[in-house]
Length: 338
Image 1: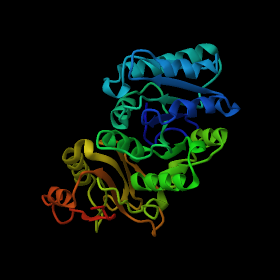
Image 2: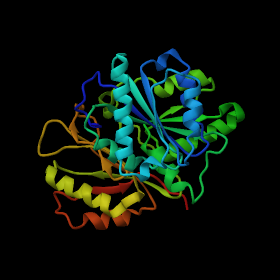
Image 3: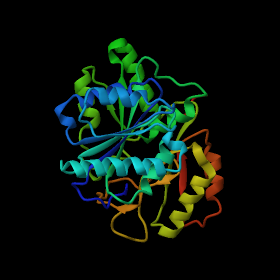
Image 4: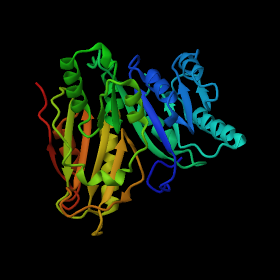
């Protein structure tokens, strides 16, 4: 499964549905599957336990639902063979039915799943081509995180293109405003879906993507500060066009330095004197295939890095070994809480 940009415009979407335990992923998916909009949708459900309760719940409302189950534990802990087999099974059943291609496949992950390993598995799947999108749920009743759940929840939220706030009927308007602040702390560039109507919320969460190329030019204008005590938002800028090989080496060193502390990497860089910038897009230490994009002269250049428990000094020290032409200018774009 190619997750880069070489897919045709008509290629179906693969929606990775993440979110913490009890945050309403299954309810959101069931709400969507009850709508006519969900026609031509396939579902893969994964749970951490041996009994696939969520799979039974999801399938109960749609007896004709094309669905594959992963009941052998958290998909992010496997080497991907089971996930690949589930995708193969889903596509094979669809072909045998004669119903045509899927418009989307939704993988509902366990609440314990980290997005990065799943993306690595999906990138090794090359028997079909899809556009990948990550959607994460956030419980309005319990939006905060503690030290135990922070690594997983921060990875899920920062990876998401859209964050869906759930259980809105159980909180006040002031609570909703507080939840929205939490969303902006973790992922200032994500689309926020906080609609009280459950059907409208589900429709918005799984609506076809408009295509990333149209949102790239405004990427840097959308970056906002975060005051979360363990999150840092950094900006790496190159004063001149940088050779691609050197940029690739720098990104590899960044991934090696941060490991699982690296949550999100995204930006535009002028490479090798080319007229168009190249898009760098990573979730954790997994990077999509770089691609050239159209951008106006006013569009900012640089790479935004969102990481947990990372200091500017660490990034600066890592970059010090590069020549002046390759070494980026680094700065923190947020004010971190004491």
